Image 1 (cartoon, rainbow, N blue to C red):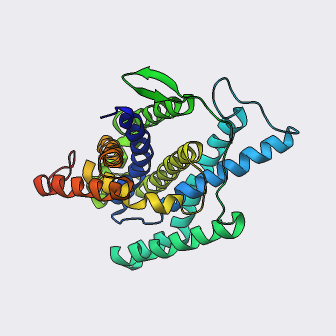
Image 2: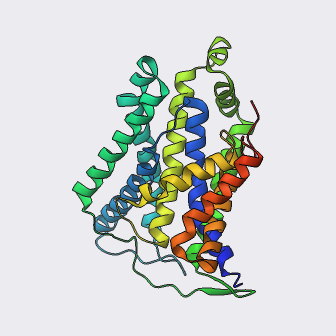
Length: 302
């Protein structure tokens, strides 16, 4: 078998893993499955595209690419700005919708509301940007030979490194800071955390911001590797939840590893049985793991 599937699987898994971290944090702290999370991926990509375009226009034209990469420094600046904007979008959605439902309705109602929010956000993207695909850059890149029949472009290599840096940052936040310890306490027992003096509302806000920012990063990766379109986040929604469940709800490393497993399983399926079976193979793997360990690979049995 051609080992090129490893690079393809790592890239797909990195995208899924970043999105799955937001899913697992939202579920463990807010106690509901947010099906609008996929739209944060799409909105993050379009926010980056729009901001990058504004910066390029302000500078009077196209900005040259950085070294061997397909993007210039304006995309890097736009990415930071867009991650903050997407975090604020997630936080704003909570203020407008989910915060009221947490007080007055059950989790099923919140899940159904997230479906409605997902459709509304997706429709807004289609209204403003149309359904036609677009790109951060149309610059062609030549893949470099890495050995063992594996090739990767500079963009692909830097995106894998970016994923590792982001996940390490989130891991350090959760394990080495007071905010992270508070997030884990709220995840275990919100009422007890509140009695212990933890500002639960602040932790909820931080959770939304982190989830939105990571979803934006995943959207930027999709835009650089494939294309940008309104349905890009919706297409990733089921793999995101598969990765979060596979890794174990509440586990950030588990979400990433679950994403990598799903991504590599899909890449193997493409090479062995055909692209039309890629999702089926990934979910078959999920079912097998959950039969053996219902709490997921890194989940804690309750």
